[in-house]
Amino acid sequence: MATVFVTGGSGFIGQKLIRRLVDEGNVVFALARSERSGELLAELGAQPMPGDLSDLDSLKAAANGAELAFHAAAHVAEWGPKWQFEEINVRGTSHVIDACRAAGVRRLVHVSTEAVLLAGKPLVNVDESAPLRPDSKSPYCSSKAKAEQLVHDANGDGLETVCVRPRFVWGKGDTTLLPSMVEMVKAGRFAWIGGGHHLTSTTHVDNAVEGLVLAAQRGKPGGVYFVTDGEPVEFREFVTKLLGTQGVVAPDRNVPLAPARRGAATGEMLWRLLPLKGSPPLTRMAVWVSSLETTINIGRAREELGYRPVRTREDGLDELISV
Image (tube, rainbow, N blue to C red; front, side, top):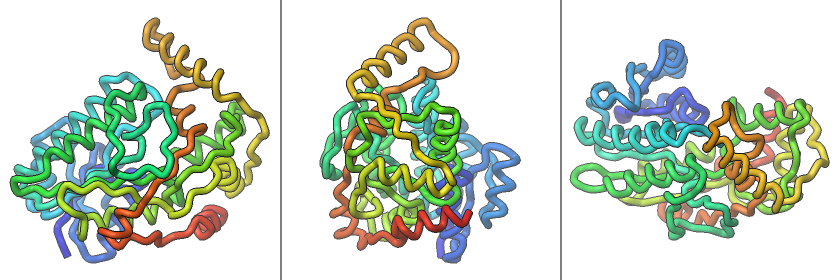
């Protein structure tokens, strides 16, 4: 039993993480940005702590007395003002680190992502030795890479830091990824880019939480760990099954990769320069995520954490059908 501080507790991963921490007998203090968020966190069994990533004082108060912290809050989007990604993902992470130090937190576990390596090329059987890409043209990827570097650099002087990178998080309770794909299909805006026959790694939300908990218990200080569902799967096959759980049939429409890349680059340039409202019809990140092989080697997590997926894709898909 421990006292734990959590940011991003009302998010997809955060909710699952809090449920597990509470079920295991931990006392959880969770950052709450709004009254609605606070109510949800209380329902999960956590103690809501009013605050925001931009407010260092509120973070210090929320983390006070905690032995362990999980930083799951982030601005996750394909597109938006660069300053917003930098403010939340980079500066916000810096504030969390400072708050943990001030509160005497022993270990900080940071929820990272394979996107810290994304810059327009496939990631094939990639492991933790691959370099971060803070130079990525995607503001999300760039900002998350910078945030992870901050966490890694903060390890030491009484604070242990560990980073966990799940890839393509899915499962029951997802209010973003699957619903957005369903909406795109229904609106006639869904298409496979480059055919969608490339391989991808995936991470059920329960497996992501398993990796986070094991990292808190066994991760080496300064360590970075990929966690996934295990063997990769064809992107098109998996997305088709995901959509099928919601009674939606994936269309056969296909957009060749080369023009999709050019269209995304041109659209982003126009939206930045003019600037235009909303988002470009296609972004670089959307092209990368849906057209490039991204297969992950989880050998380090298996060896150092004793990580094994606790949920199979088949079980996760069956659970979605019953929702």
